[in-house]
Image (cartoon, rainbow, N blue to C red; front, side, top):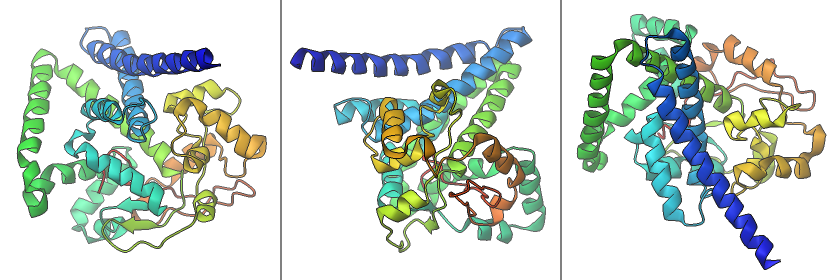
Length: 331
């Protein structure tokens, strides 16, 4: 019995180590393939870069829940490293962790400000420009959220201790961009294309997991119970017929199971979901409909709440989806 336990622990450690190695190797390979003068290799490079960026985001999610390594500091170390791959590094890692754990504790989607009011208060020419960009699937609001993290230490006195850190990150990431552009402007543009696709794919996953109320960080939050949590949490699979495809999001689509037990690691979520909900999970929403809603409401979600969904009949016609709730951009 003890030997079997040790073997299982070894196998899981190997599995997680291989996952981290896989993300790193695929990322480096994907970026390398952006440089050759061969558009087929470039296309493969874009796909691999997108794939590794998406996996890095959800691997961070597992690491901040301490679901990868037994030692918490090991989870923290690799979590910090991965933020430098997908651009979440401008926020201190501790803020990323606190933001997401508060999402579980408060059972709310925490945002930095009233998003609808923000867009409505913009000068008309800028608002029209932003709306046009979002209509064209350029995630301008996601970049606004990242820009806020960059300028926060220079506007917020309480964060002034982060100024040196922020400047250092800007310097090294800016230098890398200049070096890449010097070698190949095409490679830099292709990387930017991959990054935009990455943000859209993460947005698609984030948008339809909850019908929580938006809660502005720092303000009083209405306390909710676990019944509210499960009733307003939705699972969306890449594929129900071919479960292995859900690994593209590191099983993040098993979201009700994750909120039932946030310490359940990614490789056990399908089993937990099956034990809790079986094949007739009410809060399981079809991916084709969610893709349709992501397209249909890409402007509406900038100016409204997250919408409603009829879980009993799996009707998602009024499910607008959320925005600005990524764990990579804490308020």
